[in-house]
Structure formats: C-alpha cells, structure tokens
Length: 196
Image (tube, rainbow, N blue to C red; front, top):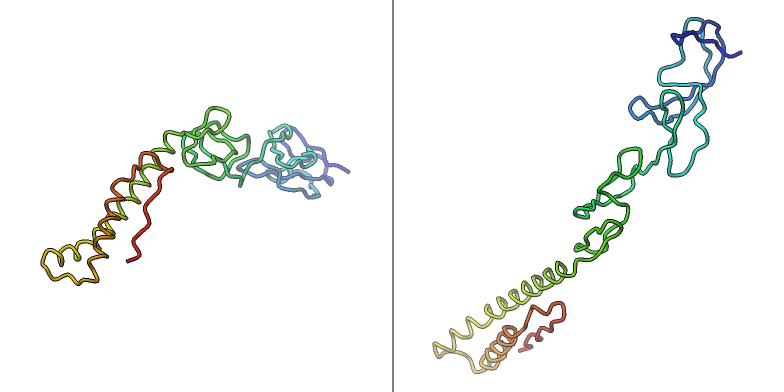
C-alpha cells in the first residue's frame, strides 16, 4: 500500500513508494529506489514520486518542483565562441548559450556571420605575408652569417681560392632573397640555397 502524506509532506499512513531522486544543485534525475515510509516520516530528501519519463539522447530530465522537464544536455561537448573562435567545454544543462556555436571554425581567420563561419581573407593574407617575411628574414640572416667571415677573408686578402666560388654563390643567393616580394604570399618562390 502506498503511503498517504499530509500538507507538510509527513506520512499519515505508512507504505511503500517508488522514489525518483534528483540532484540538489542541478535538479537533474539521478535514479530511483523503492522505499518504505513509516508513519510521521517524509519522502527522502531531493526525491519525488513523479516519474521522470523515458531517457532521450541529448536531453536530461530536470525536476521543476511540480514535475519533470526535458532539457537539452550538451555537457562535455566542445563549443566555440562566436567572438574569437575560442573552444570551451559545456558544463551546464540547457541550450548552448548565446555567443557560442557547436560548429568549429575551419581556420584561425574565420569570423562568425550570425549563422556560420566565414574566412577573413584579409586577415589570412596578412598572416601569410607576415610568415613569408619571417621566413625570408631568417634565410637572409643565415646567408649573412655564412657570407660575413668569407667577405672578411676576401677583404683581408687571405681567402682561400676554394672559398671564392662559395662566397659568390651565397652573395648571389642573398641578392635573390632580397628580390622576393612577400606581399604576394603564399604565392612566393624562395630561391634554393647554394650547395657550395
């Protein structure tokens, strides 16, 4: 026999009842147990005798105080800020918050247009130019490091005959590097390094 409760939730008649438990913080359904309720005792804390219904993928049952509601459950999923594309994990019950989307940007230069990501071609080109310039400068520095002692030896008149072609090749290579137009990146061709 099922217990009968008064207006204060205390049993006026004892009996067995199925208790459906919900989390104290989130009110989400946690499980059930059959309990015997003695005279003058209430239902266990954070429980109800109202059935939560069937489980649905992507949803969680949340107790409202008078029944259960089905709420979206994206917890653990990755979402992306529509401001900067920054990834984060969902740690709340309910729909994905405004300012976030479950769709990942495809490049670091994507901007959210209100419905999907669009690549900012100017930002991407600026980054490609900056990377090409960085690469060009690194190669120029490498060439300068090789040329300097050879040029010193030439200026001092003590360069080996075998190093003369090497000096000329690296100077020619450095000159070709200075002619590379990085503003057309990524469509640039860097000259091959000398093999001598």
